Length: 308
Image (tube, rainbow, N blue to C red; front, side):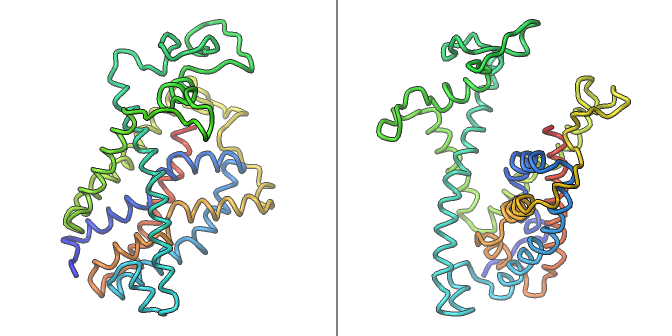
């Protein structure tokens, strides 16, 4: 079986898998919904006692057996070989919606090259009379029917929901989005078509958004309108990370913490088994698990500050 050309290729590939959209958009929302800073307590405990052990176990199994998700369960116990097929089916479903979200991001990236951002004003052909630019006027009346230009760009331009009447009439194909989705699947394919030779190089690019978060955080807290920023000597009562520790006694908070850490680290998808199977037999996968988990949690924590 092939091996990684260097240790850093493996680490960056695992970090690129663990640090994903769940860290950037899901964790800040879950954290804000469950008490802000107090949510970090159950999140950290679930990571230490749940996420990291499973993460380490999957790396160790893949490195020891040096095989993929399907044959490894046949080696462990033949009656469990169906688990490998179930893992592949789940991964197929997950790839559908993950790549769709990335296709939306690619479409936004393409649209941002216009002279004025199309989601910043209500002067576009797809906008409705209910479109209200909250930041573009000094006096704005906001009603229950008002829609921001960003919301209408997403629903009426990107998704074109208004052209669908329901599940029985979903409308035509949005060719721009279809092209973006095709490009994303093509990038994924060519990143994996030669195994670790190409996936290792792709891992160098996947995690590049991690170093961009500290500068974004410094820029965000220095802006004069940010609650608790450097221009405000006292914390705002609407601080995005309050600490009502009473939330820690709610079982739903612990359920959300467990769901977030498992959703973020990604044990059970078979990816860690496959990536670790290309390691040398005596590789220190315990250290790799700790490094990856620490980077994952730190990225989630920074994303909470950057976004809010």
